Length: 108
Length: 121
Image (tube, rainbow over all chains, first blue to last red; front, side, top):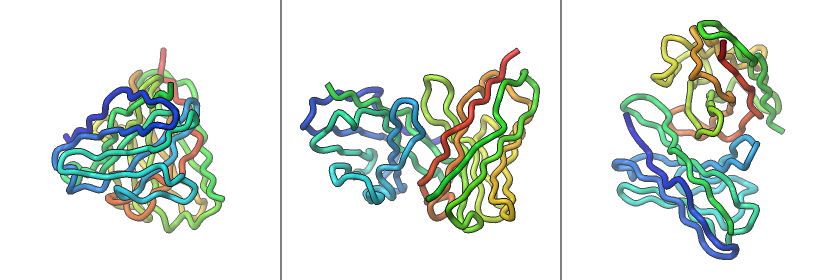
């Protein structure tokens, strides 16, 4: 089955840039979505279709991809960005949605 | 405003059955694919099942295939998840979500608040 690998945690100081990686075999050929889940809340989508921001998501959030890694970048990180972040793709071979294991972003 | 309200969760013994419902409002339910995603206590998100606007196609995670059945009643704006032969490892918060575009391209753009299912003897 297709596997998405994320680092368990990323730490950043307020005002700096956080980058969360999502590794997957030939992920460049897939459409990647990113979700944010704050403690005790349902997830929300923060990046659609690799690099689109839904309305209401700050411009500080952006997405990108290379051959085997997708990335979520958050510039000028704020304390309110502290959350778990998940990447997600569709695996056409198994016809499954696949989520990464999640990355806990800590704002120090 | 899109709203998704899950119901039907609770405590159930291993081997038992539950049916979750997700009542949708604020959008044309019959025009959107829908999905169920779960989250075990302290764990990450796990996709469970999804379906397109009609009664097919349907898609299932390997962990629930043959035990869970997703369905929808477009006249009632409601999504269902019939869960049979429940196992302890099915214990989780279950979220229903609206899918933008198709199941194989879209994301879960609106989520319910989730409903807790606890499988325990």
